[in-house]
Amino acid sequence: MSATDADALSWVPDPAPGDSAFDQVVNHRRSYAEALVQVEAALWAQDVVDPALLELCRLRVATLVGSPAASLERRPEAAAAGFDEAKVAVLAAWPSDPSFSAAERAALAYAEQLVLDAQGVDDAQSAELVGLLGAPAVLVLTYACGLFETRQRAELVLAGGAP
Image (cartoon, rainbow, N blue to C red):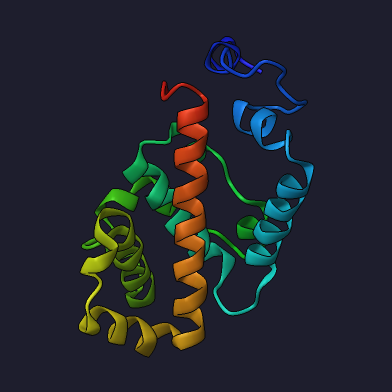
């Protein structure tokens, strides 16, 4: 645990064991912590959306919410699925960079829209995503982006908001 994490938890009378401020707060409620682990494991184990695509979206969400720690992490499931690390360097240019496929562009546009203004997702954007990935994938991607954003924002808040 860093000094920043320790300072951020000054309001917690008795932090639970954990590697980060987030873990130390979540671990106060063991059943919640276990459920969160199960949900995340299920997300990465599902077979509807490629884990490499989920990783691109997770990293884009991290940039949008300002989570440097999440930007530096890599999910092992994504690596096992052939995640292209070179795309991280050009992720901000996803709309025009030729290394991104149409499906990746649509998923990244969707992830951005969900973070910036979820109610701004329109029928045309949804139809494009369904056409490229299928309806089940849109559901998985929606839950995934919500989970990524929620966890990353919670980690920022619990760490005192300091990068």
